[in-house]
Image (cartoon, rainbow, N blue to C red):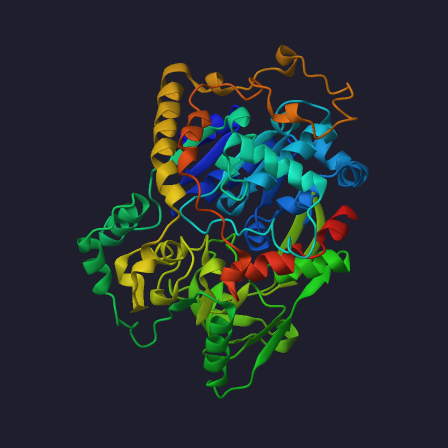
Length: 533
């Protein structure tokens, strides 16, 4: 599907799952849709599955927006608290965007759906909000946390009841959102973007395509081996991608210390409640305390409005402005542009409301970064040791960061680097088929075919007391026909669920990985902090 087709379906008001390979333009389509929707007066809540992903889109986590925080089941007391603190925002939302849904558990997706239905008093999926999902199941999958500490803490009755519903339905609550109870009822239109805007049409794209299709050949292995032991030319900046934080930090510190020049420090400035600022700082790529020296390899962390650089552009610090002019670093990017890098702004948003802001120079030392933090970036050159990958999708994410084979430098290879979620391979064919059908329907019937049905057609009444006394009954997800219009949707993908059994990744297996830190640092205590905003 082309980007223009996806935008037409989105603008029609349909629930959509926007997917495709890295570089297909998912972020561009999302941003363009959000821009158009807000210009038309719609209230758009922009969220993501993780804190880092949310900073890429100037949004917030879905945990924060919905008010569920770290909860693993929706209790009556939590729902009451959400209604008292989040009701106005949720009721005012016209469109809910959730990015990086590959890392969103089915059970959490269902919890957010429950919250929206109850708060909005509307029996339709997500209370009638247009839901726009974006992500790629071939990238890093969910980390299982819902059952953690069950040996120490007795599970709540709500937790037990919710998991029993999944068991009866033959679904895996720890799996992708396609395993959720609400998925067939939401019935999103599948928009699988097929145009490639990142990789060239050469050998690397062939390798990535074969990985996605679960058909890695000896030819693919031979292509990657040609990059084994290759090093960037002297003076060329290349980002080293690592599985864990410690490796990336050690390399950056070592390289910076080797430059025998005076350091220049840039400290982040903030605005907003301390607890929200703290969460924002922990989940932005720019360090709170940025130390640079002349000659340091750096990477831009934002897109420049004047298009002198983009997020992921590599460069070298050539000097610093005079102190009376801010002392800002002067960076020569590899495209030849020399830019004085002033502060940029990272914001935690709740709809159109700014909850917290951090102001910092949008740079970080670029010798090393984690694979997880690189997700969503396009890099000119990257060095990686893929024999140490340990999670499905990690090798694929790393390989797909560069635009061409010439920008790839391999320090090690292993068969594990080809691992992707087996569920992703099963789902991919169904997603492509559904997307192709949606394209045909768009061509035959026009965008109006995807307009949602009016609530009155289903008897939905926002003013009635929808199941207030028993918000967690068995019938919550049993009603069919409340989804948006259009027949070429994701409902049939459930037929593949018998294959979906490989998502129970325990958090401990990730150790010091970026994923483990992400969940631990960002979500810890967030149920209190975000409900107070």
